[in-house]
Length: 196
Image (cartoon, rainbow, N blue to C red; front, side, top):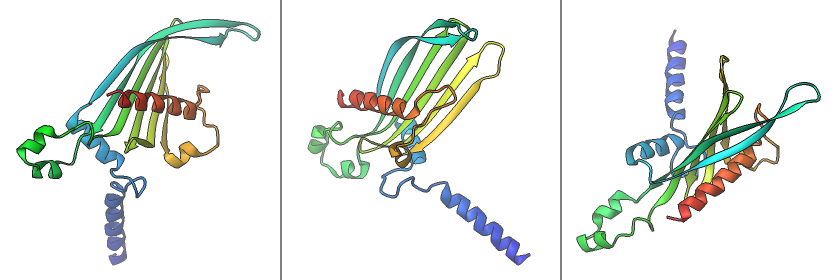
Protein backbone atom coordinates (compact mmCIF):
# COMPACT_ATOMS: atom_id res chain seq x y z
CA UNK A 1 0.00 0.00 0.00
CA UNK A 2 2.87 2.32 0.87
CA UNK A 3 4.54 1.61 -2.48
CA UNK A 4 1.29 2.31 -4.32
CA UNK A 5 0.96 5.65 -2.55
CA UNK A 6 4.58 6.57 -3.42
CA UNK A 7 4.00 5.52 -7.02
CA UNK A 8 0.92 7.76 -7.30
CA UNK A 9 2.75 10.72 -5.73
CA UNK A 10 5.75 10.19 -8.02
CA UNK A 11 3.52 9.86 -11.12
CA UNK A 12 1.50 13.03 -10.38
CA UNK A 13 4.70 14.97 -9.69
CA UNK A 14 6.20 13.84 -13.01
CA UNK A 15 3.02 14.76 -14.89
CA UNK A 16 3.04 18.24 -13.33
CA UNK A 17 6.68 18.82 -14.24
CA UNK A 18 6.31 17.41 -17.76
CA UNK A 19 3.50 19.88 -18.50
CA UNK A 20 5.97 22.76 -18.38
CA UNK A 21 9.10 21.19 -19.88
CA UNK A 22 10.68 23.30 -22.58
CA UNK A 23 10.75 21.70 -26.00
CA UNK A 24 14.42 22.49 -26.40
CA UNK A 25 16.50 23.49 -23.37
CA UNK A 26 18.12 26.50 -25.12
CA UNK A 27 14.76 28.08 -25.99
CA UNK A 28 13.54 31.08 -24.04
CA UNK A 29 9.84 30.08 -23.69
CA UNK A 30 7.83 26.89 -23.93
CA UNK A 31 4.94 26.74 -26.39
CA UNK A 32 2.52 27.04 -23.44
CA UNK A 33 4.31 30.18 -22.21
CA UNK A 34 4.25 31.64 -25.73
CA UNK A 35 0.50 30.96 -25.99
CA UNK A 36 -0.04 32.72 -22.64
CA UNK A 37 2.01 35.75 -23.74
CA UNK A 38 0.08 35.93 -27.02
CA UNK A 39 -3.26 35.73 -25.24
CA UNK A 40 -2.22 38.49 -22.84
CA UNK A 41 -0.61 40.86 -25.39
CA UNK A 42 -2.82 40.19 -28.41
CA UNK A 43 -1.67 40.09 -32.02
CA UNK A 44 0.76 42.69 -33.31
CA UNK A 45 0.55 42.33 -37.11
CA UNK A 46 -2.16 40.90 -39.38
CA UNK A 47 -2.08 40.24 -43.12
CA UNK A 48 -4.96 38.87 -45.19
CA UNK A 49 -5.63 37.93 -48.79
CA UNK A 50 -7.66 35.87 -51.27
CA UNK A 51 -6.89 32.51 -52.89
CA UNK A 52 -8.11 30.96 -56.14
CA UNK A 53 -7.14 27.40 -56.96
CA UNK A 54 -8.15 24.39 -58.99
CA UNK A 55 -7.67 20.67 -58.45
CA UNK A 56 -8.00 17.64 -60.67
CA UNK A 57 -10.50 15.05 -59.48
CA UNK A 58 -11.04 11.55 -60.90
CA UNK A 59 -14.62 10.87 -61.98
CA UNK A 60 -14.09 7.47 -63.55
CA UNK A 61 -11.11 5.32 -64.31
CA UNK A 62 -9.87 7.38 -67.30
CA UNK A 63 -11.76 10.63 -66.80
CA UNK A 64 -10.79 13.61 -64.68
CA UNK A 65 -12.58 16.83 -63.88
CA UNK A 66 -11.12 20.20 -62.96
CA UNK A 67 -12.72 21.64 -59.82
CA UNK A 68 -12.25 25.34 -59.05
CA UNK A 69 -12.13 26.78 -55.57
CA UNK A 70 -11.71 30.14 -53.90
CA UNK A 71 -11.25 31.43 -50.41
CA UNK A 72 -8.94 33.45 -48.24
CA UNK A 73 -5.98 33.34 -45.92
CA UNK A 74 -4.67 35.30 -42.95
CA UNK A 75 -1.40 35.65 -41.10
CA UNK A 76 -1.35 36.85 -37.48
CA UNK A 77 1.98 37.66 -35.86
CA UNK A 78 2.59 37.92 -32.14
CA UNK A 79 5.55 39.83 -30.74
CA UNK A 80 7.10 39.83 -27.26
CA UNK A 81 7.87 43.51 -26.83
CA UNK A 82 10.45 43.96 -24.11
CA UNK A 83 11.74 42.99 -20.69
CA UNK A 84 9.43 44.90 -18.32
CA UNK A 85 11.89 44.85 -15.41
CA UNK A 86 14.60 46.62 -17.42
CA UNK A 87 12.09 49.09 -18.86
CA UNK A 88 10.84 50.06 -15.38
CA UNK A 89 14.41 50.88 -14.31
CA UNK A 90 14.78 53.49 -17.06
CA UNK A 91 14.34 57.20 -16.41
CA UNK A 92 11.33 59.04 -17.88
CA UNK A 93 13.51 60.51 -20.66
CA UNK A 94 14.92 57.07 -21.53
CA UNK A 95 11.41 55.58 -21.55
CA UNK A 96 10.27 58.18 -24.10
CA UNK A 97 13.20 57.29 -26.37
CA UNK A 98 12.76 53.55 -25.88
CA UNK A 99 12.52 51.79 -29.27
CA UNK A 100 9.98 48.99 -28.81
CA UNK A 101 10.57 47.64 -32.35
CA UNK A 102 14.29 47.30 -31.66
CA UNK A 103 13.67 45.33 -28.47
CA UNK A 104 10.88 43.07 -29.66
CA UNK A 105 11.02 39.53 -31.00
CA UNK A 106 8.65 37.46 -33.08
CA UNK A 107 7.44 34.63 -30.85
CA UNK A 108 4.46 33.20 -32.75
CA UNK A 109 2.76 33.32 -36.12
CA UNK A 110 -0.68 31.93 -36.91
CA UNK A 111 -1.79 31.01 -40.42
CA UNK A 112 -5.31 30.13 -41.53
CA UNK A 113 -6.43 29.22 -45.03
CA UNK A 114 -9.99 28.37 -46.06
CA UNK A 115 -10.91 27.24 -49.59
CA UNK A 116 -14.41 26.30 -50.74
CA UNK A 117 -14.63 24.18 -53.91
CA UNK A 118 -17.45 23.96 -56.48
CA UNK A 119 -18.28 20.35 -55.63
CA UNK A 120 -19.50 21.29 -52.15
CA UNK A 121 -16.48 20.59 -50.04
CA UNK A 122 -14.13 22.89 -48.22
CA UNK A 123 -10.63 22.71 -46.84
CA UNK A 124 -9.24 24.57 -43.82
CA UNK A 125 -5.58 24.66 -42.86
CA UNK A 126 -4.49 26.04 -39.50
CA UNK A 127 -0.84 26.58 -38.65
CA UNK A 128 0.82 27.74 -35.43
CA UNK A 129 4.51 28.65 -35.84
CA UNK A 130 6.60 29.13 -32.67
CA UNK A 131 9.77 31.23 -32.73
CA UNK A 132 12.78 32.05 -30.60
CA UNK A 133 14.58 35.20 -31.80
CA UNK A 134 12.79 34.90 -35.17
CA UNK A 135 14.00 31.31 -35.64
CA UNK A 136 11.34 28.65 -36.03
CA UNK A 137 11.54 25.88 -33.41
CA UNK A 138 8.09 24.24 -33.33
CA UNK A 139 5.03 23.98 -35.61
CA UNK A 140 1.46 22.74 -35.20
CA UNK A 141 -0.49 22.11 -38.43
CA UNK A 142 -4.12 21.00 -38.67
CA UNK A 143 -5.81 20.19 -41.99
CA UNK A 144 -9.60 19.75 -42.07
CA UNK A 145 -11.61 18.71 -45.13
CA UNK A 146 -15.40 19.02 -44.94
CA UNK A 147 -17.83 17.49 -47.44
CA UNK A 148 -21.60 17.94 -47.48
CA UNK A 149 -23.47 15.25 -45.53
CA UNK A 150 -20.21 13.54 -44.52
CA UNK A 151 -18.03 13.53 -41.44
CA UNK A 152 -15.06 15.92 -41.37
CA UNK A 153 -11.67 14.43 -42.19
CA UNK A 154 -8.81 16.00 -40.24
CA UNK A 155 -5.14 15.43 -39.59
CA UNK A 156 -2.82 17.16 -37.13
CA UNK A 157 0.98 17.48 -37.16
CA UNK A 158 3.19 18.64 -34.28
CA UNK A 159 6.73 19.10 -35.58
CA UNK A 160 9.88 20.11 -33.72
CA UNK A 161 12.94 21.63 -35.37
CA UNK A 162 14.66 18.23 -35.62
CA UNK A 163 11.63 16.72 -37.41
CA UNK A 164 11.49 19.67 -39.81
CA UNK A 165 15.19 19.27 -40.64
CA UNK A 166 14.84 15.51 -41.20
CA UNK A 167 15.29 14.57 -44.89
CA UNK A 168 12.23 12.28 -44.87
CA UNK A 169 9.30 13.56 -46.97
CA UNK A 170 6.18 14.16 -44.89
CA UNK A 171 2.77 14.19 -46.59
CA UNK A 172 -0.72 14.20 -45.15
CA UNK A 173 -3.66 12.00 -46.17
CA UNK A 174 -4.55 14.53 -48.90
CA UNK A 175 -0.98 14.21 -50.33
CA UNK A 176 0.00 17.73 -49.29
CA UNK A 177 3.75 18.20 -48.68
CA UNK A 178 3.77 19.32 -45.04
CA UNK A 179 7.44 20.35 -44.85
CA UNK A 180 7.17 22.36 -48.08
CA UNK A 181 4.05 24.05 -46.71
CA UNK A 182 5.81 24.85 -43.41
CA UNK A 183 8.86 26.31 -45.20
CA UNK A 184 6.71 28.44 -47.52
CA UNK A 185 4.53 29.84 -44.72
CA UNK A 186 7.50 30.35 -42.39
CA UNK A 187 9.24 32.44 -45.09
CA UNK A 188 6.05 34.49 -45.55
CA UNK A 189 5.71 35.09 -41.80
CA UNK A 190 9.34 36.23 -41.52
CA UNK A 191 8.91 38.50 -44.56
CA UNK A 192 5.80 40.11 -43.02
CA UNK A 193 7.58 40.52 -39.67
CA UNK A 194 10.62 42.16 -41.29
CA UNK A 195 8.37 44.73 -43.05
CA UNK A 196 7.21 46.26 -39.75
